[in-house]
Image 1 (spheres, rainbow, N blue to C red):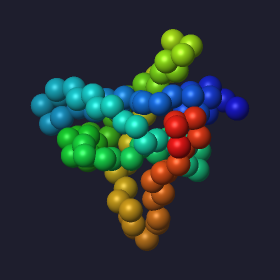
Image 2 (image 1 turned 180 degrees about the vertical axis):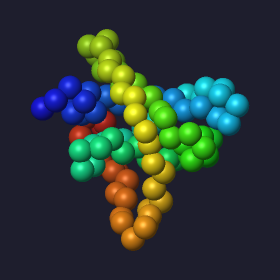
Image 3 (image 1 turned 45 degrees about the horizontal axis):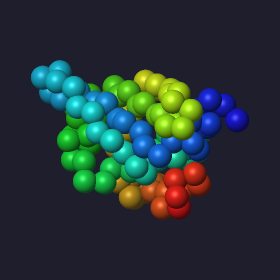
Image 4 (image 1 turned 135 degrees about the horizontal axis):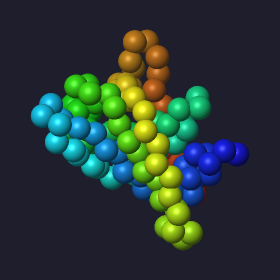
Length: 102
């Protein structure tokens, strides 16, 4: 298990950082996330600003924290917004994630 897999399995929240059209940062807490096909998938629930920002500028940063160990990891990269049926591909939104009270 790599470090990202470890933190995804132990974290109850992650924070997604994006920037808007004028470069102002936006950080939004996310509860539903998991690794899907080796990529970090984050459900967009009641967060229209995050999706809009990613469509304008796909550069993002995600922080995950293990609250019991008080250790975290930060991941930076480029994001893509996918709908539940984007381009004929199904995008699973995890509902019962291990380690998150599910």
